[in-house]
Length: 336
Image 1 (cartoon, one colour):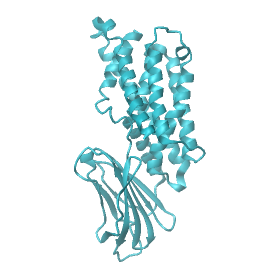
Image 2 (cartoon, helix red, strand yellow):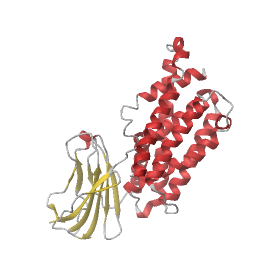
Image 3 (cartoon, helix red, strand yellow):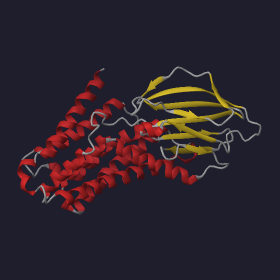
Image 4 (cartoon, one colour):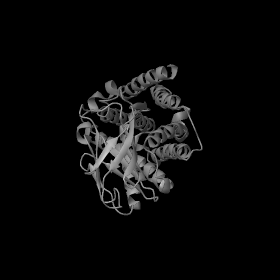
């Protein structure tokens, strides 16, 4: 039964690999607006380097607002950054309060965007815009629950966009097996604890790291896991103590998660809350992925019974080949 599980989850995972060449390019769009005076704002606009459509992503400003002195776009990490001045000719002293901010092109590009508004009096607003909800009316007072909701969504989106992270979880399932019960739960919990530690340390400024090196080691962790799965010896250290493997490599993956969070930024008044719910969003996305794999296994285990022996190596070889490709790509980036 354990071997049937391995085969099934590999087929389910293959449905997620249509964009394997882009293993982990989490590049959220970010619109950051900071008030300088009642009618003047500094704007930072960040969009992904690669998009799914030729339709550009563009901010939508309230009536009476126009941009001036735009800077030359520059590449930073996985995004293209522009900045400019926004002048709003409004008669009242409320500025952008009660006004609508939006972003066009989200549906065509299949992305979401974070809008952050900082006012001089200390009020801080943020909202995740999606294809279904591409506009945001600025309320008079910030709503604390928005931080919880928005960062949970961003965390879940990140784990689903990070195919390399999902493939490591997939490998842990292959290593432990679906019928392992508490052993499986303990292994996944160890992975969660590992990446939670480094995610927090990096985000709070206690740990710095070279991003290309971490991305390479994340790919290497998947390759090492695939090598262990390919061994004929089933009594190896990783198989006997999978939680140590999960926790150790989880530390590396947490740095990758932190890199994504750094792209977005954290609200100054709610850093612990945002960090907590970003992490919870990652866990929710991870759990959904695991449940989908287990559900797929239940659907196809009986029809695939006659091909068990022939198809048994497929998931391990697929995981190994994919991670080797990532190691090669990211290794080249290290040398450049």
